Length: 308
Ligand code: GLU
Image: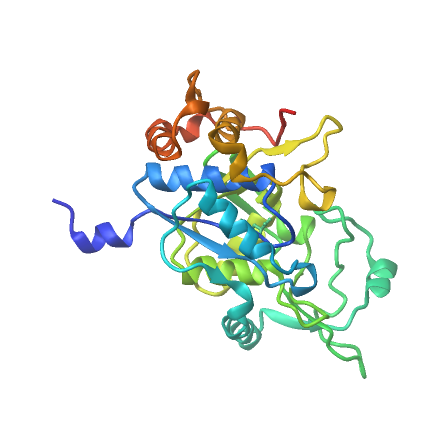
């Protein structure tokens, strides 16, 4: 018999963490379905967290719209929905921890100063911060942002879908921002603090976040927190190869599209969907989909063309 305490401690806990910058679109529905089915198929919990830490990008009413859409599609989450905008104290505590440990340092560089001093590009396509303030602020310079020191070593991790992934943070990313010059906590800070605080041990999300994973693993190490397992799903692209994202005004998805839309997501994720599934009542569909879910069928590719 398994010890009930150990069984509780190791129970699968996944999550879906949308940014409320617009309505749910096909790409975010893929992340919701993938994370939900993987959690439920492993008899685990599934949490929903609204990542509204980036206030300027948050659209009023979008969080409500996303939650209603999830409900309409028949998703059932565990516990209360967590809003990052209500957890700023926790991010502050993490930053203080890193400051005291000498791992976070203040940076006075403006965008134009970085543009003038950077010599390389980061994996995100932006300029790689060259570490100008690493050894301390210039005399008279004021701190604008706080950055995390990154090591010059390769992070190697096994993604459950994409296989082995490697990244050298110093070479590919540079010391990254924890607290932005506009006073907002960065996505990396908030996501790591929340995943750990919520006991999330399995992250399933879009592959556009694969390049953030080494940053998050390093940040967790700096905070003395355990890292979850990661699985990165392919993203949906249009025929021009562009990611279907809110910024590109990808069309909203909604429960009126019914089980047919969920079946489309499953086919996108490489799951065999028998004929006639589209006509099933929602509850039956989910029961079937949880039983039929195979993470191993998800294609280990970065992008898949979305059906029109
Ligand atoms: N909030 C992020 C997004 O909507 C997802 C973060 C994550 O899953 O780690 O792209």
